[in-house]
Image (cartoon, rainbow, N blue to C red; front, top):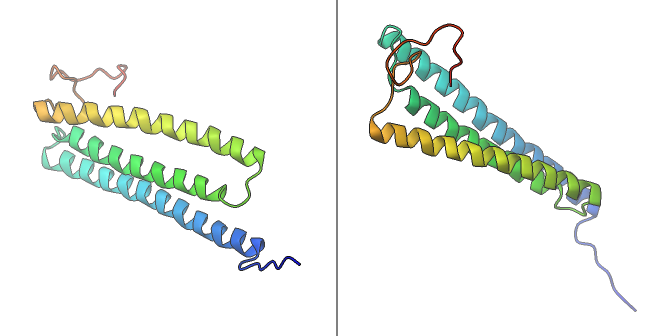
Length: 144
């Protein structure tokens, strides 16, 4: 005779994990939102203080990039949690695709952060709206 005791029914576990997924994804979205608001406020403050010739743009971008990277990590954690309870092959495939895309985004974001950090260490932070030469960009010329 085999005695089987189910401590937590699978439906309850799925509901609990679903709630955790929503909380983790909401935290990731909140982190990204806070980072965007912070960066926008710092950008406007820098523009107003310097009368349109803001310095510190690379520092603002660097911090925003860190917020984005952290938010993406939370989003990926939510995706992993979603497949934690009896995943199907379809869910595993979707997780693999999402993880690959988010990992690629994080890779390029980390590379950009490293580039911005190197520019800051060199003291190479031109005013907003100018290239590294210090000359204003023309209207048709693409920015960063």
